Length: 136
Image (cartoon, rainbow, N blue to C red; front, side, top):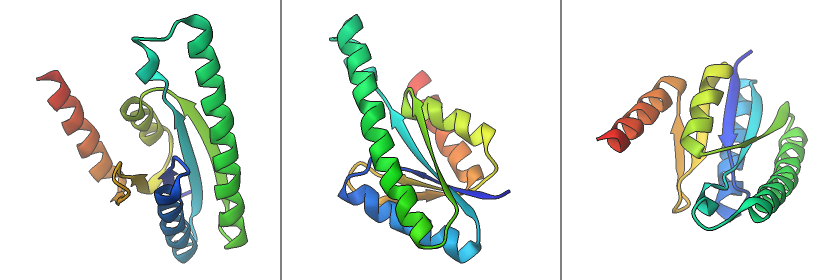
């Protein structure tokens, strides 16, 4: 089955990206997966044990709430949708998800609130180039 993937953080810009993904999935008759990535890597240098685990737990809880709202909105538009939460660094999680799912289009919220829309091949190239840049 073909899928549209929407990576979301749930803020105002993220809701606009969700709306775009819902509309595309509805128009194409495809299922939609909302992905929330709980990335605690920003704590690696400052947090130890208990604090890191607590932050990870709280991020996952927030993600479940954000995704529940997104799925509810998609279902109201007649779009079959599901929620997935993963932990890790965005680039690494995206690489795994792209390999696991039969995706047609990926929506990713840009940090300044714009929408990045990729098909699977474009995302693979983006991920490979961003990895290459980090290795140089």
